[in-house]
Length: 59
Image 1 (cartoon, rainbow, N blue to C red):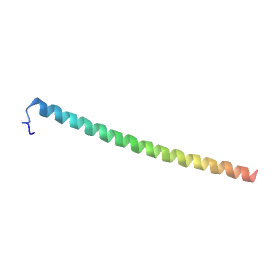
Image 2 (cartoon, rainbow, N blue to C red; image 1 turned 90 degrees about the vertical axis):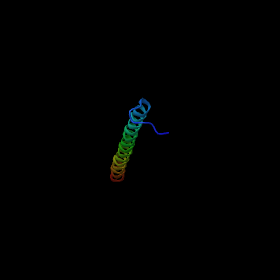
Image 3 (cartoon, rainbow, N blue to C red; image 1 turned 180 degrees about the horizontal axis):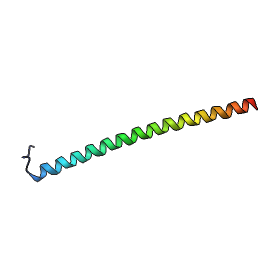
Image 4 (cartoon, rainbow, N blue to C red; image 1 turned 180 degrees about the vertical axis):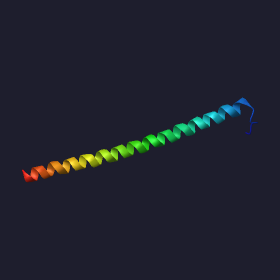
């Protein structure tokens, strides 16, 4: 169904899809940040565990 650009249904649909796009890209960014955070946390805990292990071996 095609509507003329000046009709209210068209503009509300347009802003809705823009809002969805914005929400979608925001969620993607959040997911990426979360994954990165998990990756870093994993890396740090691995390093700490290795250090603790080395201390145990020496002492």
